[in-house]
Image (tube, rainbow, N blue to C red):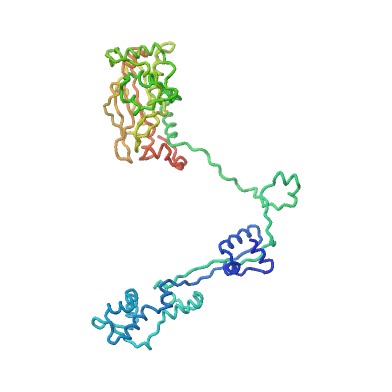
Length: 493
């Protein structure tokens, strides 16, 4: 900037920034950038200059120095009486020169094929190397296209001997606010300016009071939260009440023992469950209920002989990250059985995070969200369970369902629920269901003819089907693209 302003102080203009940059030993791109910066404050004005010129290829440079391929082939054949065979010609001038030069000589009828040999049709006085002469003329004119006619130029381009380059530069003149030294304009009125009075002489940048500020991006709901909100709405419409699920850490008693799951069950091993180191033990559980659960495990009841093992208090009091929200369901059923006024039919649901020590793949994570629902009422049957599940899934748009008999320690009968995934093109397990066993319900104090139907499913699997995602790690976890959160459409079932 300083060089440009200083030069213009003694000259009316810079006629062309390209040669001027070379004379000042400055980078031309930097000069153009400086001119544009000065133009913003009207220190200078500029107009565009465009100059086209030709540059020679390496082949063309070789022709200028050694002659064209066709002339070198022709010269070799003229000097050899009777002509030359192709191998001899290649040995004399080179394989590449012979290949290109022979074709061009044939086109111009300088040579012909006579048996195995190539022979010249003209004398050396009758032929001139026009290609070399043309390229030398172009070189002497510094690549200016004005020295050649269009036909000749097209011929050189066709042979890829030259390429056209357009150089853009600027003509620079003084602007309305020109000054030999640029004074930087202030962008803000500061406290210091007001105190020392420098604002009176400071030049400020013009303010545009009509411009809009930068758009502020709002928050976006993750696809899982969109589906969760829709699930909650559907379950509320079906008459369910939401259970409090804000405790991620549960005791083994509520997570396993109260569900009539034996303490020797493989799911209670460290390779399937995340146990808590500190605090490792829970403080307390309802003592009378604990004794009834212990008795059911050891000696049985409600027509069952139990598991017939020594129930360990230490095992029951271990803390863990809950493996299912059924740990909350068991607590709600216990409260329902022991509430003031006795048992009343109820429908509960929960949607929250659970944790399992699983191998991660396209459809499994160590942590996921579980949707669980249960209905406690008199004389319910398996038909009520299937009907409730089908109603729920039909409302969320998954109509292709299959039920498969399964085993769960705390439900009998039990069923796995499968839904068809249109992207993976296969049936994917999306939930589990069953009727809670009497061995689980009787210690809670529920009436004998009360049945509890329940089902659970992951929130991720239906979300993957809804948003056509084939890898669960693209939906939940550290590999999720933030842009997906912003662009995911509103969830409507």
